[in-house]
Image: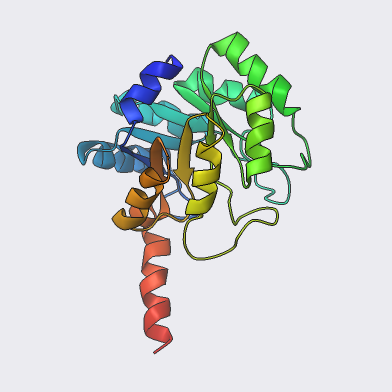
Length: 227
C-alpha cells in the first residue's frame, strides 16, 4: 500500500489495535481475527496487529489496512519490530504498513533505525511508522526516513510522562515536525481521541480500552477494591 492511500483511509478516523498479552486466553490467531472482524464491522478504519500468524489470520478476514508489528518478549530492549527479519515476517503475512520501535538508545538485538526503514522501503515498498516516546526520537525517526511518527511509547520507555492518560502535548509537538502523526498510548475515551485529533494527529490508535477485556475488567475490579 502506498503512503498516500493509507493516509487517505485513516485521516480523522480510528485505528484499533487488536492484540493479546502472551499466554492469555485471547492469545490465539482465531480470537484475534474475530476481534478484528468485530471492530472492522463497527467502523475501525485500520488495524494494528502483532505477529505474522495474527497478521495472516486477520488479512484473510478483513479488508481494512493492517499496520503490522512483530514484538519480542524483552521489554527492557527495543522490542517492537527491532530487526528487518521480523519486519519481513509481517510484511510477507500481509501487512500494509510496518511499525517499528524508534526509541533511544537502541538496546539489544536491533538494526540501526535508518537501515531498517530503508530496507523495508526498498524490499517491500511499504510505509513505515516509527513508534517514539519523545520529540527528539521523532526528529531522529524522520531523519532516518520514517513516513509516519507515532506517540505509541510515551510514558512507557525513557523519561516521558508516566500517567494514566495519553500524552496529547507530545502529539502536538510531533505534529509540528511536519510529518503525519498517529496518536497512540493510553487513549481510553472518545474525548481523548478527539483531543489528539485537535492537537494535530492524522489518526488515533485505541487498543486496550476496546480489545483487552482482562485489562478493562481489572480497571473496574481495582476501583471496587479501593472503596
